[in-house]
Image (cartoon, rainbow, N blue to C red; front, top):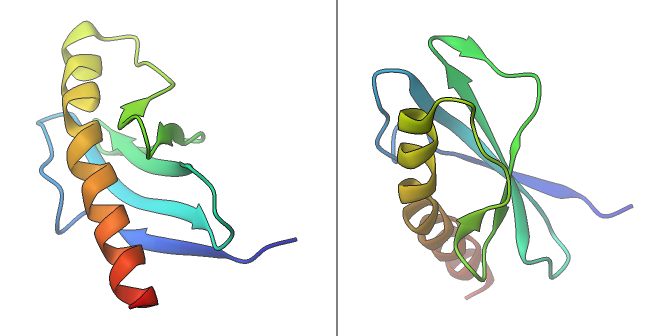
Length: 91
């Protein structure tokens, strides 16, 4: 099993009044996906959102249309940040 890397997001990625991104987990192997952990209305969620780093979209959706719109609009920012962190570690 490959080791994973946890990248903190809370202090770097903007949040909304109800959604806070906590961290992204990425396998050290070449994988185009990350698991993004978040809290909803102050409660850490049991499941992470799957993020396609290449397409810069979340594969999962939230029930609230407003929260889901915020999450989907944040996907490119998170994907770029995670890619930057992983790239600078390799360089």
